[in-house]
Amino acid sequence: MKILIVEDDFIACRLLTAFLAPYGEFDYAYDGEEAVRAFRLALEEKEPYQLICMDIVMPVMDGMEALKRIRCLEKEAGLTEEQLAKVVMVTAIDTPRIMVNAFCKLDAIAYLVKPVTEEKLIEAIRGFGLIDMEEAAI
Image (cartoon, rainbow, N blue to C red; front, side, top):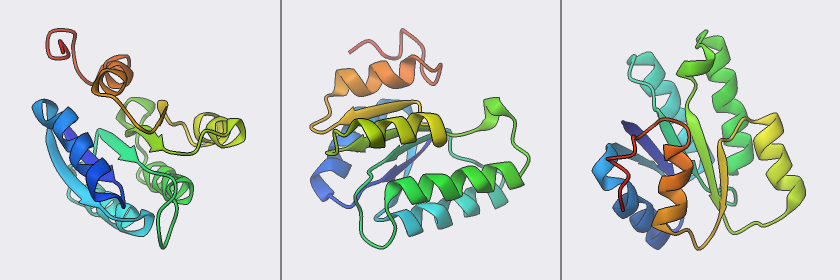
């Protein structure tokens, strides 16, 4: 699985990498603007990301705006519903309005409040068929 981790906190980035290491290969972005550029490049190279773990509060461009732009890129590329990146919002923001926007307007598959545990993250992505039950045995 091809994974993009979008996180401005070094320790959070390392944790996500450690949790997901058995399941794929990684690229990293420090902020939303870098994430959009990385996503565009992956689409152009015909190697799109299957999973994106995205923080919300970041410098330059926040995660909500980045996800909005990523969804526009997917639409422009004509991707089918099955081909869309599965996005897990990983954030310290525990606000119902933000959660609703992430799910309803931007099609995030999960919203995890920091500190994130390996079990919660793996459960979220397993539920969307990105890894199977045997792979996800923690």
